[in-house]
Each structure stands twice: as C-alpha cells, then as structure tokens.
Image 1 (cartoon, rainbow, N blue to C red):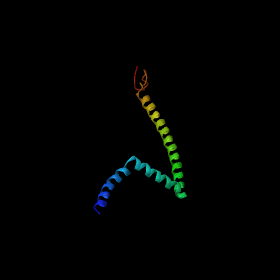
Image 2: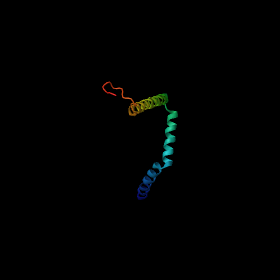
Image 3: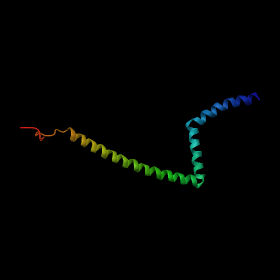
Image 4: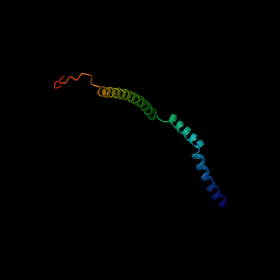
Length: 97
C-alpha cells in the first residue's frame, strides 16, 4: 500500500511536467485536429464563415487605411498652404501706397 502511494506521489508531478512541456502541447494539438476532422459539419461551416469574415475585415481595414492616408495628405497640404507667405503685395483696401 505504501508503495502505491509513493508511486502516485511521484507520478503526479512527472505527469504535470510532461503535459506542460512541448511534447504534451503537441499531443494536445494533434488530438484537437483529429476531433476537428471527425467533428460535425457545424464546426466546419463556422470555420468557413470565420475565414470569410476575416478576409472581409482585412479588406475593410485596408480601405480604411487608404482613406486615412488620403485625409492625412489633405490635412498636410492644407497646413502647408496656411504656412506659406501671402505674397509681396498687400491687397487690403485700407492700405495706402
């Protein structure tokens, strides 16, 4: 009986170390992939839907990035125009030569 308890006490930490290692994680990934292949069609349909949404959102982010660059360019051009000197001739009506 004492031997059984000693074996269990030693096996629990060893098992925890193995499951937390890269080998344990690889085994878990393999089991998950096997379950995905054997799973029902709902999981596959959901995966296809999520992939299509990801593609759509990627395109949307690209479009928003292009719009942002355009607006940044407009604002930069606008601030450059304001910082340019107005010219050598002052054309205000109340000034006298």
